[in-house]
Image 1 (cartoon, rainbow, N blue to C red):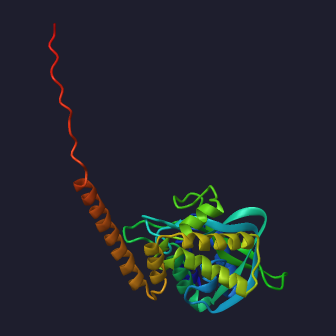
Image 2: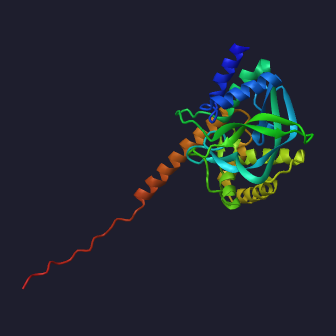
Image 3: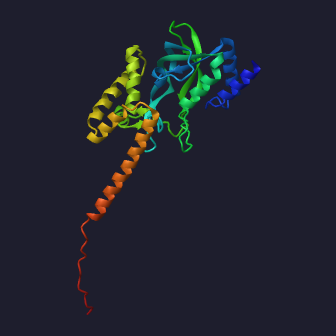
Length: 286
């Protein structure tokens, strides 16, 4: 068990926020040893697309004192470096609460479960840039019976990350981004659609639900005003089923955009009317 505790501690060190907190990691390990399991609190894409090695899912759980919102820039999964998308994050907020799931794994899958969770939520771009938008905490989650408390690893927005949006964007600003952004996991609109669809199907209501409904309506309006080319491209992109297909489509569009810009520059260069310089007679000094 001591060896497993050491391995678990090494895995927890990979989580921003726990990496430099020996006491908190020790408390988490002690809790896991007593319970024989570990939980992750899921509130966005983890609800409808859980990470691997999940052995049990418990819906209708609640986290008090936090709110969620589209406060994270994403340049890998739902956006690119040229046009980052927006994804959800949690931040402390008095008198607010977040509804979600608990994803659980037993002692035999602890390490694989945590490692998969880290790879999923803290990806590294091919150029080595780490998407450190989250810091990780161990928070008390109220179970569906509204009495039992289960502590769980939870993604909270990293306010020190360059990808954190400290000033909340308006619904209009968020809609403009989400209607157009895309990444290797699909369009930003799909992320919003799948999250809201799941909330509707399961009647999940928290302090952000109404705003998410308003945002969804605004995004649908903005998508109607995209150019025909952009709308058709996004619709085709949303039909792709593998990450490889999406990566190829993104690369091809990037190449195509570069060629189009060059063609426009070439056309502009050779369509400029020659400048005729007016000739003046030299004035003779008296």
